[in-house]
Image 1 (cartoon, rainbow, N blue to C red):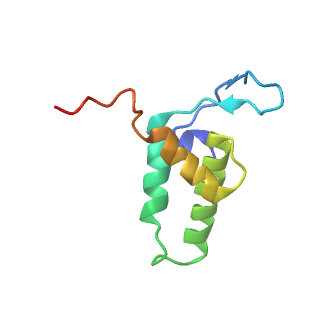
Image 2: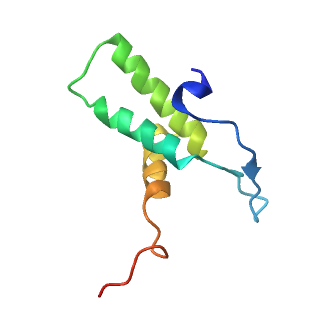
Amino acid sequence: MLWSSVGLQRFPTVPSNDLTEHSMPLYNPAALRRLLNELEALDDTHSGADIERRREDLHYTLCVSTGVREPARAVEQARRLLAPSRDTLAPAA
């Protein structure tokens, strides 16, 4: 799959402070959101070889984008990365 087809660019990685951990790749929130939206649109009611191949491509791209090898965990990580931070939430009135 071409990187440009999903709006991803190859970014350098941010080195971890702990030398035993892998580097965390930088990510593009808009591209992650598009990937998740497309994956969610391909729910289990859609079937066929082309649909399954596209689902695999989306999982692979999410794995690469998040630095996580397991597709289900990559989806969770993408959702976590896109979730609003507690620091950016406005206090309750």
